[in-house]
Length: 398
Ligand SMILES: Cc1cc2nc3c(=O)[nH]c(=O)nc-3n(C[C@H](O)[C@H](O)[C@H](O)COP(=O)(O)OP(=O)(O)OC[C@H]3O[C@@H](n4cnc5c(N)ncnc54)[C@H](O)[C@@H]3O)c2cc1C
Image (cartoon, rainbow, N blue to C red; front, top):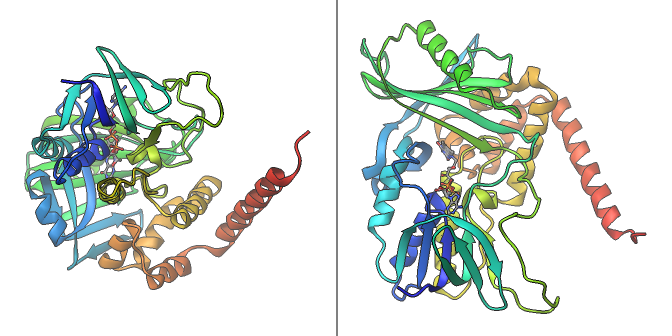
């Protein structure tokens, strides 16, 4: 196999392998190598998303659970949504990625290796891996993004369990149950019944500080006890950290440039997926934004346009930043912010909102339900920050 490619994709996760599968399906696929150090089984976890029926059909092979009803609970109330249009799905990431891998065909291939460094040359990038060296005209890098040290993040640990007694309402997904310890940040339990004796329970914190695994395990045990659910077996454990803030901007230590003239053309090295900001900052959901970005990118590549589309509009990101700023500045309000938002919307509206496809009417409902003072204060702060930034860019530097 030649080590020279049109495209190199670093990382065979949701973004990388979806892109590779879509390129392989094209009439004249560009020669592409996907470089990934881990097997799909080593990375298996649950991906939750809202989907309309046609997409749910396409994903059928990787679906572990599918619900038309979901709920959010706090100490005093419960909001239940049901939807005729959207399902909340839980996918096995391993099954999804195996499906993508099965679609690869020459000249698109997947190799097991780890990228150590990128060396941009004049017309291509040399990719140095643990075992080899490759060159590619374009590099799409999906390695997980760095999260700023004090950045807001969603961190969680979950168990899949078998239960002794049948689960009370297996048709209901619990997206957020806030009746748990709130001393370490905004904390909720996410519980998905896959059948009447099999469920996933995750303890999820939104804060800057990740806790030791024992903290989340204890929270799960307390929640099971409080809900009279007895586990007969913990089938598996999964954990993760998802950025909910601006990604760290320091230059990637693994990208080194040879000294060069300023005017020299540079090969394209671009981030895709979560690394390109595809994670919704107010919720941590990313799957659908990545799917959309990758479909647009693959269509662009077929037309010779290699540029990576922005995964989430800057307006939505700005709104989410304001929401997160209120979460940070008024932790006393955080549970009620999520509950009030859920209460203001019905199932279809909520699903659209979470997908970043809210209509003007959906937005007006959410805005009307939010406490005005804290949001106005944060909008004023963000605007001032922007003005100061723009002014400092315009002023001559000493
Ligand atoms: C445990 C977990 C659960 C999540 N659950 C949800 C969810 O329920 N719903 C949702 O919408 N989003 C969820 N997310 C967020 C997001 O959808 C996922 O992170 C998604 O997998 C991001 O896709 P990606 O391709 O951008 O990155 P990834 O899927 O993380 O892929 C990046 C790949 O790069 C590889 N890599 C790392 N270093 C190297 C290297 N040196 N060389 C080559 N490859 C390398 C990694 O092994 C990995 O496979 C979750 C995230 C995590 C971590």
